[in-house]
Image 1 (cartoon, rainbow, N blue to C red):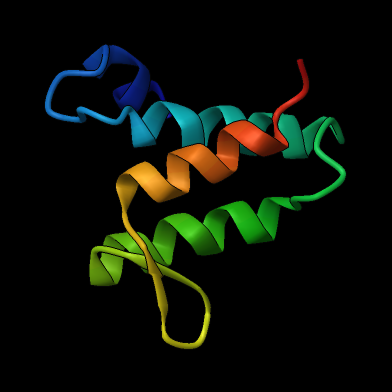
Image 2 (tube, one colour; image 1 turned 90 degrees about the vertical axis):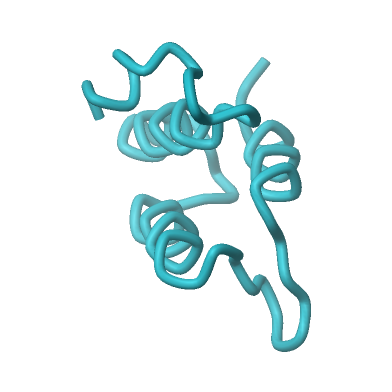
Length: 76
């Protein structure tokens, strides 16, 4: 996680890494009732493996889509 934070958004135009870290930390603290730690890790791992995340069969979310979704789950 520190590697992502140290990047400061460099090489990650959508700041997916920062949003994944924030979502994971929120899930650990129970601040996101819609996401568990396992779900956040699954989103990242699937994106890391394929370059996209499939929330449902045949639907592909790329970086911007994932970031938009993660933003919608974060507390204000």
